[in-house]
Length: 462
Image 1 (cartoon, rainbow, N blue to C red):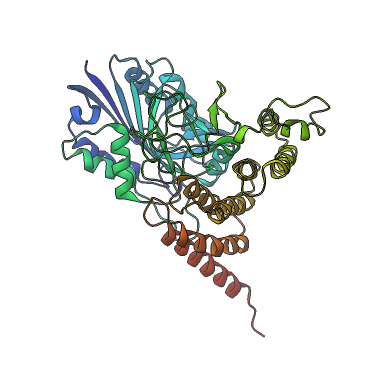
Image 2: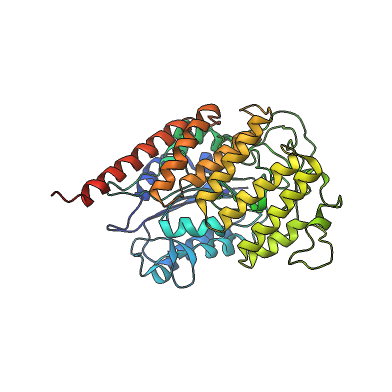
């Protein structure tokens, strides 16, 4: 059956432009329709710097209702409607004050793709986020829907006076690969692109809707790490990880937080080494850390806000507290769980490390990037001290998540302090993506330069 391809590149005109999105269209247009879609024949629709949201909606709706596979290549920048706190794709006339009226709401994309046959839609994205969107994504994942395969990256905001207009590097690398005439599977193509680009600090997306579980949390993503969100301390999604009950157990997984494969590449792997993950229909991740639930720990923590009744699963109470914005309560409950695990299983046990991971995630949800970074580094150090190798996926995951949270620390002094420790840790745990240690060193140098410039500006002779 013929496929449909939608090429959409959009970014604002003027000083609000973060990325020259349309610059990738000539490269994509040089790829044959068959290769773009991965089908024998295909119809291609191109939208370059559209002006009106309604025009984008019309083209997207036509593509979504067409029979056969749909592949969308999307490059642009994300901005936030400050009144409703909704993420939008910025269009040519978009300004920070007019996002609600001139940009394309992200939830329109979700709605138009919602009724398509699961697994028949693939979305490749190369997006740049402004500071408001980046902060919003830290606490509220950007949803695309479980039936849509998503690959790509969201680049963080670039700070400093030297900020220029970026290029859609991920999409250009993807188009360059496709121009060779080969069309690998989407997950493999995504891995090849990441191997070429190597940019660190991006939110990397990989969700395969054709695989049960998809390798990620229900088609949502957020910068809890350089990839999709992983609520409440779940063991990190491996790029080849299959959920419990999957037919494949063999092979060695690579960390989903920063490895070039990211969350769900098709390959045989072992299960998560801790065996903690299981998903419920809500899309939040629940765990039973080494059998804690039902082994007395729940009784040990039931004397708090949960009342006299025993908590069936403390993760349920923690999740409810986070969703209600009661971050201090969630952190207190996780701390009591950690202390209970320490008494029952001992320091360095998987149960204790699990709750330390939960606390690191809770700090992220509370918007405390510095505390989350420090907690993830502590988890990595504890795993290394327990004898786990530096290339163990769970060790790499902890360092990758610390690295990502470090990039969100707003206080320059605190960022420098954490950066020194992170650089030392990165020297021992470089991770799977090239340039991670160099990224830390470069960012540290930028922080030092900014600090020196500030001191110079504040110095008054005499």
